[in-house]
Length: 190
Length: 127
Image (cartoon, rainbow over all chains, first blue to last red; front, side):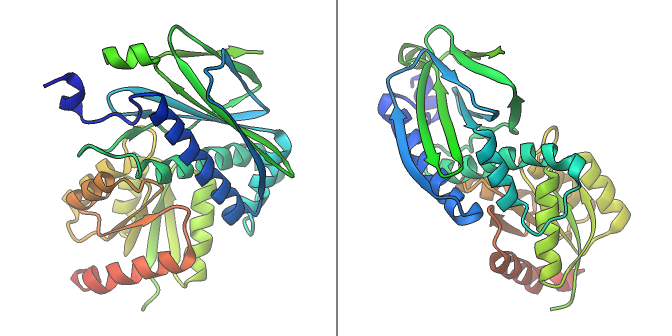
């Protein structure tokens, strides 16, 4: 039995799995935005051609999904868009002025957690649930750069209130074949 | 059904506030909240709620581990997992440790009410 069979099928074993994952994430994100915070996505642009870096917007939330490989997903928001999301998400809730920024960050964390939590049920193939980290929020960073064989699959969702960029960072195909999980990304501070 | 005293467990304060708003809207009282597993166990012992809503993904001890500890202390505890994780195995793991119900985020008021009523009708008389 190969390592792969022993651990069950990974979420991403080839580029078409990565494409399927990011498309599912984009679709669920658009539905979430429209149903929960009444923001319509006007246009989606994909880049599945393995960019050298992922440029970050004003605020970014990151989650790591782990089966026998680690996959990192990042949602990066324009300021105007995350403020609008917060406005919709916190409707009816009293928030003190000095708490707004931390609630905006929690809204970003909740959104990536809900979207990925919902999407991953479509990808579970083995008898073991994926491990999903708690969201990490990053302010003021410039980009996430490629390291060694990592691959970036990105999408941009444009709305009336700004853009959200989504990036799925996976170990490279050669790396996936070798099945040696390790961290494979770094963040460049501005 | 009668108004229940509820403990809300979630690491996100905005989710706690949203959930509190929904629970109060459907006639229940949120008597306490907790943002970590340890706080949840402490608050459970202190407040003895009729029901707990439990997030799964929390820093440190996750909601499944917390549920297991609370159920070991009080096998009749009514715990509903409230989480974004729709993975079948996650549901199975939660039920195996003693959760009585499961509801998916984003939370809708009617689904929350239905889940609470179902759990309370089935297990509430034990308490």
